[in-house]
Length: 111
Length: 114
Image (tube, rainbow over all chains, first blue to last red; front, side):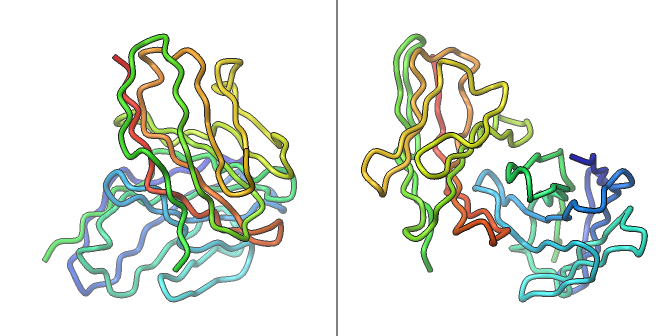
């Protein structure tokens, strides 16, 4: 599985968009990009995933660059409840469904 | 909304004792997983389980670990002889089927080995 690189921490003001970057320069053509988050010590929570195209759901948007070497998770209107560790995971789901978590980005949303 | 549940929320055991961590996955899900997270460290994959068989396991999942789906609803993780280094948060997860990409995680069981 491709390795990902994320900034260790970020801050965001409540109500503003939070843009969390992820570098996955060694991603291969059949690998998906997944985003999960972990609030305090709770179980990780799925946010969104994508292969090539940008994706949007009720929680977030995922922007994947054309060369697929990086992506950005966007929380359009961050709230205090979005304070969490955000994990970018790259995985080829056709041959494995295990999730390999890195250290993620600790997002602090402040009032 | 359906959710994965885990019991107990906190288990304290002595080194060398056997422990069983229990999980009830979401009812129509077919794929099941255990992960663990040592305090302050990454979430680590342990094992995946499908059709009453282990699909994949990590190096952590040695002979001291076993998993079972005894009755069609519970999914258990057994550690035969616990070590101090087994102290961690253990998360169960489930996935509905092969076409789904989302793993649903439970709240975790904190295992403390003394």
